[in-house]
Image 1 (tube, rainbow, N blue to C red):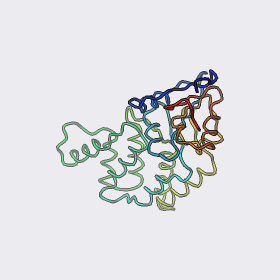
Image 2 (tube, rainbow, N blue to C red):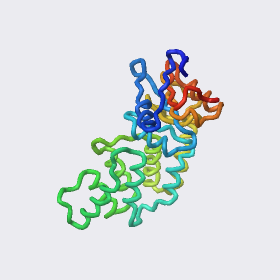
Image 3 (tube, one colour):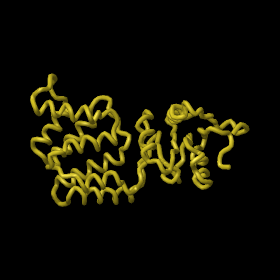
Image 4 (cartoon, helix red, strand yellow):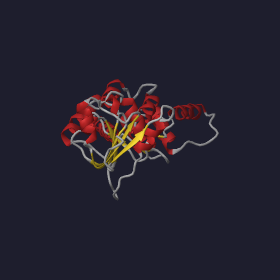
Length: 249
């Protein structure tokens, strides 16, 4: 890496600050206006990729085609269950930033008991409506209200869009929520990926995509095939984070 061309930037990781260095690398600016950046994470650690997307301003997560998180939620979600609002909040906190799931659940409890000092926000009002009159229409309005809260950012738009569409389909009554979620998954497979200006994914998920900049966060965890894919994602610049100058050896 010490003799790499100028288009390749090596960020030498320090054991004490490696996580913060990777976060900073993921925020690398594109060299051209409206340029694109692909942040290439660990293939195995899906949770780590989600965290990186949530911590990186403007970034979105490139999802696996099976949308497993959504379909599993839809399979087990009962809209008129006592914990429906709480489960909905926890799910939304995994696809949006600044939802504040624990505090939001606590606030709903105090509002229901009449002990809250402050009036409900629009999102809290929508969630209270879901609790008091359960249904897919109320769930849909609650999702939209949470999304529209100040400072909330959707970093998993593929999941959110499929979720909203599935709720709308379930509301119409022709399909169960689970069936609608499966239908949305299949529709997404046929329509291709949603990739924004700054996207986070694994080498496999980003294969075939190209951006102005490719940022490789964990080259030491990649085999030769995945490393080749990662190194060839950036058309103008490649940023590599590693502890040692020799990678892929």
